[in-house]
Length: 337
Image (cartoon, rainbow, N blue to C red; front, side, top):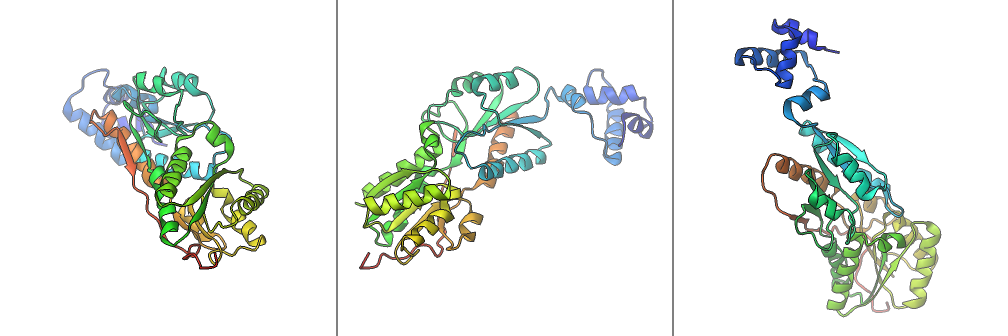
């Protein structure tokens, strides 16, 4: 590992002069500074985080706040986290991952130290209790998700309301007249989680607009729950021919449950989903879906934060338009359906 003494020897200066160049605590000549910087680059020296912070008055660390609450699908959350970390490294920033459900107290604890320069906050609720503090903090922040009242905040996400609408519009275009949404686990709705509520809004609005009979069914993420909800749907909506799934772990178990009950996908039942492409592509019947653009959302959240840290104005709202990819799980409604 290259040390500060190695840089000093290479540049022909004292270790204290290198330290002054890094911290800015004492003036040094421009020629000496350039020689030190050239030695740092040539030797591959990585200044200690404390020295970098002294030089820039910043820690060059971002906090990613993603409480691992009940009902969330961790693999998708981690896709967002990986994207944030990758984008942050491109800006020479590290990421501190905060997964505890600490609410305002946890945010304040981090913000009151020099540990992080800014925050990216996930799992936003419609009436999130963290919002007043985020508005008042002297730390820049970006929310992945949209609360009910986003004014004064910087928010980015997939347009989940439009995603719900797009799934229904596709089913309506194929002639389906009775549809159901199999949604997130009940606790996700109880918390008022914004993205889940937006999907319900879009699903219901599009069904009403197209004159479809519709219903919404929160569901635990287990094969047993998939079987129960499939039985309930066929009992309560015997004319059902279209299903939208917004619950990643439930996608294949639900298709299997319908098959066990005598409904073939897509001959008897068309299925669409809001989920990552890799999941939709690899179930037994590849599913027509709206992908969750975790890579793009995470990267753009970091870009927004970097601009805010640099003093550049950014839009308060960035909504990514959904796109639907047609696969084998959807077909026109048959005359006998």
